[in-house]
Image 1 (tube, rainbow over the protein chains, first blue to last red):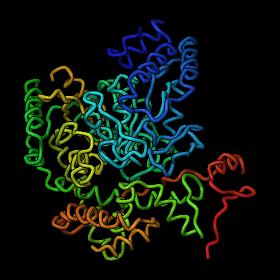
Image 2 (image 1 turned 45 degrees about the vertical axis):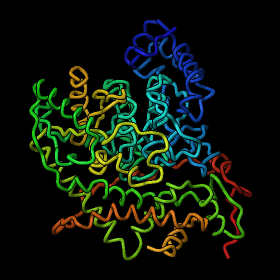
Image 3 (image 1 turned 90 degrees about the vertical axis):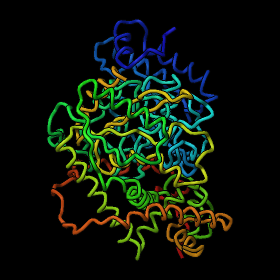
Image 4 (image 1 turned 60 degrees about the vertical axis):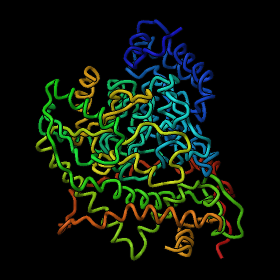
Length: 472
Length: 92
């Protein structure tokens, strides 16, 4: 029996090289764990039938000496990342029977590294949500407390990793969709610099915000996955060319950590506030200088996000028309086919965001909402860049509340959106951010701290993250 | 916002919506617009309109894939097709 609990990517890699177990045996262990546990959690939408065949390919690489750190490592992958010949539904009814016709760039990299893709995981429909309750295929439960949500939208990947049903997991972020579930499930979640990891072959939600983002059991795991996936891709016009991938940090070493206290003096769970203050105290005691900072425009991050994102959603999701792929309804004429297919295929939250996006882009409201939000976004980016002239990193709580009960917030969209209030600045500014477990509340639910760094300063996040893991 | 506005947006977005849902959508949209409306109170001052650094982000349009290589695979996903084409209902 392999002890899956203690395993990290590096430990598994060493064990695979030593021959303690094979990738096939490791994969079998996870498939057994899924069989045993996932009926209660529902992290996976599908376990791939070729997982063991992938493991055999990995075992060959290990034998012939061509293995990398990811060779033979089992992954759970969010249902909006395309793998040629595999279903990818974005947890939507409109893509229920859609089979990907090409590999995403991320899939190509994972395949060439010899990673083992166990299956695709549940998510909020089209990644729209913070609790994995808007999936057309049922909710996912939090393995730490199954009466609670795992967070979202990448809740299936988080639950699979937290529940011991995979060793590594990928999600995507548009605004907190990896950091928030990482926080709720006691994991590390990394949102990379916008343009670091290719978006080619992920089902788009908000193109100016989306980014593939890894979960890990620890900081090092997210670092390993990020290092493998972060490279320029000519197939994605927003992928940053190699020569421009330089850290924008002023100092390579983190000494000063800025804390914008004013952003979370209200509306934050008291135990989270207390835990965050303790974490800051620990950082101070281990030699970091803590500096109060003011980010007045960042207060409007979530409002700006909920204008820009729906605008992008309403244009993005117009491709789902019932003609080329996906769900198609009968209609008398072309227009009726469009309207019925989209009306039947999209769930409530997707339709809500499409209508909202249509509104903020329509004549008469465009300037007041969309244009204004774009300007505020630039102001937010500018003020954070300016803050990085005097501090090396910014810390906040990851979420304002711990994992909440299943069913909660479903009838109040704004309450749901507020889960990501601390996530928005990183996504709007395109900067990297990492969420790291920082303790537990009285009920035993995980709490989390989040660090924000300048563009392409992921290394600094990993360094501070690893340090924090030793002092928390 | 009124029910009529919701209907107009649904029409623009090409989404058929049941009458029974319209009130709920109206309430939701009003509450979301109430929240995002706080952006109006931000004073941004004069914004200097300038283009970002200009560089070509498009890949070179060379080495095209051979025509027809993916036709069958892509069409296999289409709900309705004929002779290598997507088939649609009449427009008028």
